[in-house]
Length: 400
Picture 1 (cartoon, helix red, strand yellow):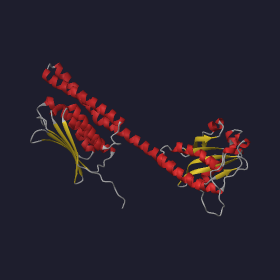
Picture 2 (cartoon, rainbow, N blue to C red):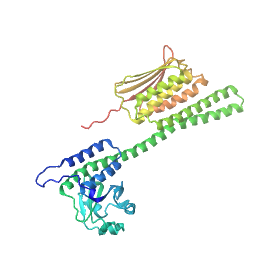
Picture 3 (cartoon, one colour):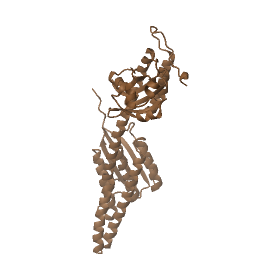
Picture 4 (cartoon, helix red, strand yellow):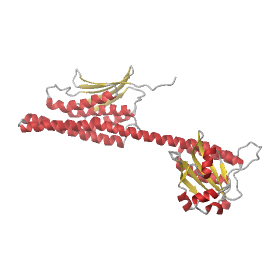
């Protein structure tokens, strides 16, 4: 099997200054793979066999540095004994030839494998492998990983292959750094998402349940005094609060199962309008007058839920047949209107029909405040209600 491993490079005379076609092909393949393969560790494992063939080695391993930069973690190997692979799963960043490659940030050779044999306590070193070559994967003079190539006695990596290894090192080092940044961004996104979930629970579900608890108290008092008209009103308030809490919980589950962000706010509103048509048996038009809606994920969530709560109130109270949602941008202010042709805003003394709705409006106003905006509720002259959200556009800062 060893006889079948041949270098891919066609070595040229030192003074020719030419790079062989196979070498360019390898670099091209790496570049193409980096643009199409999202799993960098799998990519490094796939190119391990290529590195072994380029060097004329008999075996190889690839390691990546841990996030605390104290160890190198084995992510792939070819041709090594299973016991050695298990023992070498995690080694110190200062260990042997790997540490030398990290310190000297260059392709390093280690002809005395006695240290490796002592560290690994494996006869593979000296009996089968007589030298080790380490190819560091670099980014801005920092080691991101390393290829270990295990050589037979008398074998050496030609200088033109070493030059190719330096190019490979730079390409794959950048890929590892990008993967590290992606992991870090994902951790930050997860923390932000958890905070957003906590805020959502506080702003909607927790307040709805607190309101229900408050109405249960006055319901109990009304029942004790046998004031059944008030008891019926308070019972209706509790039922409405429970319905709202259930809807909030369902929305939270849906929101975190299928995030708004990947599709954007506008498609999410379109889906919301489509769902409302089926549930409320009313026509809904959505007019987006903003060419480029640029909101943060938290802003999108607040706007989405204000519109959602508006539609919930319309379905519950307005008896509307037509709803129009408009999204506009004027003088640096986003303007969201939800207009219906229903019965309009109820009088304040009509407690039975406005108590639950006014609580929903309180939550909507709190959401508007989170946007540094305001929420306005108006009656339409021709009948119906307009709920208007106005909040400032936050333009990105540009470096001078």
